[in-house]
Length: 187
Length: 187
Ligand SMILES: [Zn+2]
Ligand SMILES: [Zn+2]
Image 1 (cartoon, protein in one colour):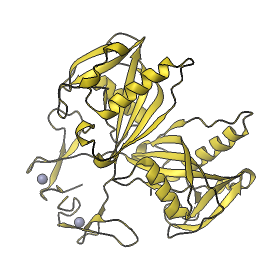
Image 2: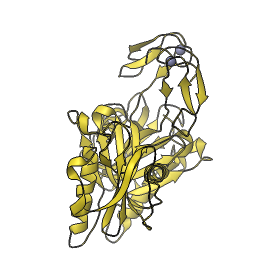
Image 3: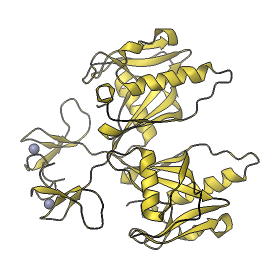
Image 4: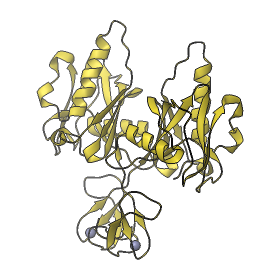
């Protein structure tokens, strides 16, 4: 940020009165331009003993496999965002079951929220963001070709939870620190 | 948003190529200025049979009672943000127990995440944002003087969950639609 989006004056970086953090501040109109983390919402769609993955048609991680997920938009709930992303990226209509992973990805200022979801019908497709969409059994998951650490985490938790004598899917609360940049969800 | 924060050129509102939503777009430098929901993180601090509330020293809802909560900052996890807000607003050090409510507040583009937390010591205080901080038993909660719908929801769920024969505190996933504007968390 170089200029004030309200008045076009150059902004400066300083701690506003009553605050304790540096912000982009406009000394002309007084606007303070806060910057805050963004939410990535998505699904882990399950159909029988298989899960649905999408092969990315966009950078970063072009050609790698991921779960349908993307930035939550203004005016949406987190659930609506997860359903929309699944529709857009995988052409799939799912039923949300529960919030399953919440991951703070510190160095990119994102919070990723993945829902467990049922895919009732074997219907899905590709999109501008997706080269290929398909269902994988656990032994078919392309572990070395997953796009992001967070996706591998969600899948590992899912298969472990499902394998328990009495399957249960508790919320997983995770944090990813700087240093994993190359593996993380950035679009 | 009136001007591009990268080059100071006036922005226009249109659907960028490959997108399906209107965005603020700069026709000079090509920047697309996305706007996304923000996260409010906070705590429901419990000490024995009492919970900690703060009386707001700021608008909106000056003088009304709330849970310690505020905007998550860049570089934080959701947990770190909840702990920091509790420290800043209530001068209290708590131990997070679990994520308890996730509420999408559609018309203000916020997602509120409240953690159940233990307040080990009876130590807390006031701040620039808080006129008074105190512990309340269930029968003492000032239900008519709560700042926001979301705070009343979290407290009602908590006392109901605690009263169960076998207390358990499942994640509550909520959505608040337009029309409740006057009651909602906006700072
Ligand atoms: Zn300005
Ligand atoms: Zn520009």
